[in-house]
Length: 613
Image (cartoon, rainbow, N blue to C red; front, side, top):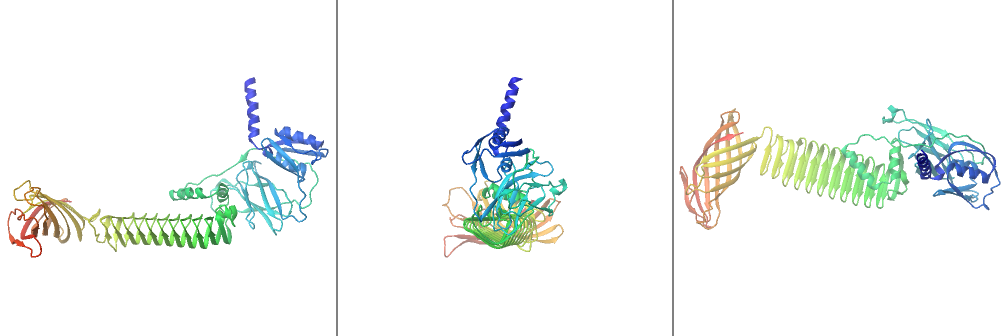
């Protein structure tokens, strides 16, 4: 039991010492005591030591004071009435005689505690600011704040905001330094989640410029503090914006952004060097500017006309007008105008106008206009206009216009326009314009894709064929695309038949015309190379061009018979004779070029096979 009590006492002392002396809560009952005795009682109650020069502070002054559950800072303010300044260092409070104030001081100091009106608890991380001068601060972990204002300020109004609390505005009449404790009312549970504008309670500070005499005051203020920062669920795009803003925004600015979520301040212009150093001060995240100039980097709530930044512009909500930066523009709302960045443009909502980025453009919602980037354009929803990129364009939903990219275009919805890329186009449904690329993929197509390979899942033309003709005993052929234009990949083999090529491989294009519900007419042009691999002749080019005219008639839901004649042209540059033909119907035989060493043959052929689809 003794060991337990010893540990308990030690933990209490360590806990008390972890709180700065001026913010420790004490209760004192001092009656007609000298100042020296009063300070000893206060130091014992707060478990700290005073340090001061007895020649500068009269220790024989009589003090009468009775306070309950009051921070040491406030107790000392009551004792000295601004005649002595004090600060803490370690577990000591240092007292110094206050310097005589100027006859007409240029500024005055307001300080005090932010308290919960219902519980009396001290509130940490509350925002305290003055709208005219933009002076601002945040209450410390013990609810204490300190703010300096100019005495020439005509109408001083101290505004206090805290998430999940009603706003408070205090009218300051006195232009002398004094303490102002402010009590805040918690929001009802239903109102905390509402986005509507909530009322702000206006009160008046009763302190006047004349210093009051020593007085006995009873104060109830329990020690625990409150820091309620309930978070709403965020989307992936919003989380991305939060991550970006955390990199460049100071902790105090981030607190202001949360607490002042229902307040927007307006200024015609601002100039900043970096986000925490500029004419908007630490409230920049809640100020909307008409014109904004940022030497290196700027941070603001919104831009209503023009913004330029040497390196980066960071805007919490919307930009209406023109925004340009040497490296990046990061906007948490929409863009209505032009956004030009040397490397990156980012908008968390829609873009109406243009994004011009050296590397990447990103829109969290729709794009109505143009995205032009050196590498990548990304729109999370629709694109109405154009995406032009050196590498990749991505639209999360439909595209009504043009996607033009060096490598890849992707639209997860419909494309009412065109996709043109160097390698791959992907879309759900394509209408009014073609897909032009090496590979085209679509769920359905109302237009004709143009490329080396085109795949259309619904309503497309897809056939796998096993066939025989006069050159090869077995040909395996893939036909894919749409009925009006499809791609052909084919390979053939003759099972080592003497006089026939060992392997043939080729590519072609075809079109199909419907003759009846179960019958199609195919017209195809195929170019294929014949490989012999026998070493008898010098290496050369053996090329076979085939024009097929085929009838496809359906046998069942997934099988069709295809047959028909073909016109063929073959030429060889290695003196190799015509491949073995069965049957053989020659039109041109062993005809030499006048301008090369190639030899030519022509014949009529026949093909028959089964198609699977």
